[in-house]
Image 1 (spheres, chains in turn orange, red, green, blue):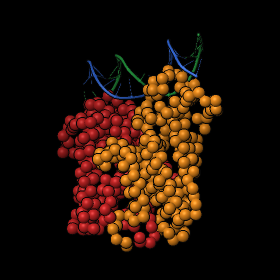
Image 2: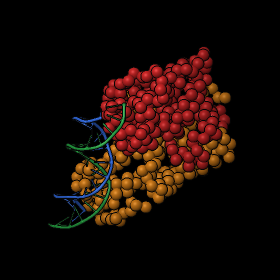
Image 3: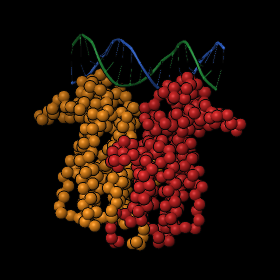
Image 4: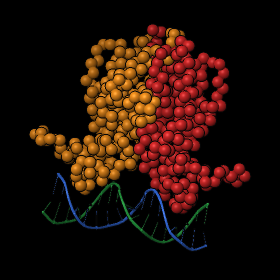
Amino acid sequence: MSADNPTPKPVTKAGPSSRAKILDSAEALFAARGFSGVGLREVAQKVGLGKSSLFHHFPTKLSLYVAVLERILTRMDERLEAVQERPESALAKLRNWVDVVVDTLAENPTYAPLLLRTLFEGDVVDRKDRAHLNGILERILSRVARALKEGIAAGEIRPVSVPHTLQTLIGMSVYHFASGEFGDDLLQHPVYSAAEVRRRKQHIFLFLEHGLAAEPA
Amino acid sequence: MSADNPTPKPVTKAGPSSRAKILDSAEALFAARGFSGVGLREVAQKVGLGKSSLFHHFPTKLSLYVAVLERILTRMDERLEAVQERPESALAKLRNWVDVVVDTLAENPTYAPLLLRTLFEGDVVDRKDRAHLNGILERILSRVARALKEGIAAGEIRPVSVPHTLQTLIGMSVYHFASGEFGDDLLQHPVYSAAEVRRRKQHIFLFLEHGLAAEPA
DNA sequence: GTCTATACACCGATAGAC
DNA sequence: GTCTATCGGTGTATAGAC
């Protein structure tokens, strides 16, 4: 792919590398205004470099964007990988993953907007990069899909459509934390406040277990 | 607001006005690539006009964008208003609205991406226009919120957080139909195909009523 | 109401000095 | 590895003829 490491990481640490600083700044800006809405001029200024210096680290604007996404997806994947998968019930596994995903999104307010954007800004990323990013994304989703299938096979979970359920889970978590000021207005509290994050988790858990109905069908 | 009608509608019809044709073209392009990703040159070309002619109908690019959004929100609101609100159960009302919203999104593939975009492209629309658009949006959401509150008061619905439930409903409907190629890949069928639209509705209905659990708690 | 011509800022990207 | 200077192109928006 087009966002390889030019410098394979200075293990001899000496503060954050320029590359990391560029990624951080670009992540914040792309999350707020999308690929087309951000100019490299602005990124460079935020990093404290000249515009042309960016091209030493990333050959094109697109490669920078892809590198930002790759870092986010990788980090999310790593955190999910670290979750213990003891022989639990499928719903308990699901609950654990929701817990980690919500925590990760809540701790990194750039993640949800950027992830959601790339789902329908598909036009900007070309086929090759998209395939690479989809690979990481698929690792994440396949974990959940497997748990759903096992739960259904065991009779623990209704025979739902697995893909539609994945879409619902993404909507309940990623969309919520990407909803910006609209979400703040709706909740009448900041979406990213500790209290609302807790409420969101609770809402998702209970929704998964009971839906809306008050009395069991 | 900044997107008023210069020509207050030619009731003497003679084919679609330039204004309507501009709105149609802009809607398709903005849905696909967002505000910053679309140039007026491209819009004008799609309409079959010169670039400068657009400024006769809309004073700025932003006013065109706002006009597109306003038209979508208004149409959605009108369709929801037409739904009979007989003295039904709260869950039945909810079901009716989900039915109409999903149909409207499914029949107009530009709606979901554009609606979802504006939620976190908040920076582009200024305060005044945003207030106007939020007004229409609020009319839509308040209907659902009222039904939820009534259902909770009547003991028909669990004592959920109303705002969080609204977010979940938006995620389940708007996000799903905005998920583009990613959604197609996940479902392994086109999101907008008749069969998948039907499945989505069914999925939402059953999820609202039961969640995921197979056996009543 | 549509056109051509134009203004001027910014875009992503390159060349080459240091 | 960062800089200045510059390239060609496009961005929104305006002026003014028709």
